Amino acid sequence: MTAIQITNVEKSYKSLKALGGVSLAIEEGEFFGLLGPNGAGKTTLISIIAGLIRPDGGSVKIHGHDVVGDFRAARKALGVVPQELVFDPFFTVRETLRLQSGYFGLNNNDRWIDEVMENLDLTGKADTNMRALSGGMKRRVLVAQALVHKPPVIVLDEPTAGVDVELRQTLWKFIARLNREGHTVVLTTHYLEEAQAMCQRVAMLKSGKVVALDTMSALIRRISGSQLVLHLKSGALPADLRHLVTHPDEAAPPNKFSLRVNEYAEVEKILARLRESGAVIDEMQLQQADLEDIFLQIMDKGTL
Image (cartoon, rainbow, N blue to C red):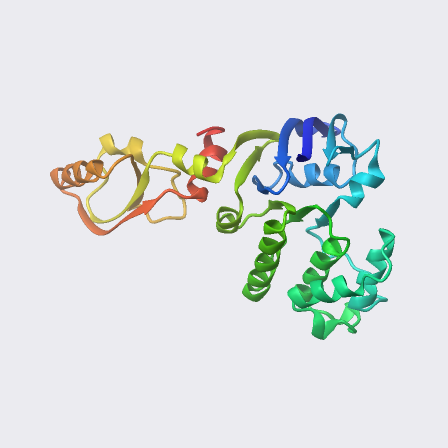
């Protein structure tokens, strides 16, 4: 079954085209990554999925339920963790989660609430007022609120932004368990190492359009080989090697380069050319391509 079906979704804000005909299908049980730079349209798309805003065109269905025409069933199938820390300052953690349960008509939900709090390390804060919690603890409560009705589809919008390592590890352990149990998870994050570790499939947005959509392994295979990182002690990179330079970093030292290599035999040819030109290498490292390399190439060129 398709967990989320997005069909030709469009959204504009006056002259700004936030989404320009986005179409993709997220299958049941997937751990799916939705990536892109700021302003790419990720949050707009998630807001449409969550029913917070309406698209100008196209449709979104959650487990077959249209988010506009059949919004009650669509909302019940979905749990969303927003970027912003939104909370009611008049309730404790447990009261907040009981109230959230009530929105979905769930009575006597304390057993699951206790389990969620335990897995998110909130048990010790169960009777603490929300105002007294740290930012990281409030973030945990947002996650708990999204999970309190056991939704089959979970959307995480930058869930670990600005939080400590402990919360990241606790969160990913629990979310990975829910995914193994059959829950569909959609993740947006600027921490690409998290996406690479967790996601099975990835869609990348740029300027409101999908510019890449594939499995994580396929995307990494599509990038050209590895990266040979060179730090030159003296001399310069020969002009005939400059076409191999990948995503130049303006903040990097002028004598540090990352060159694309398709196979190991090319490394010796590069080193021979450097020796021939008189350049002296200070440091050298051969790195395998990762999601960051893919992301930078796609955002730079619009394609791999």
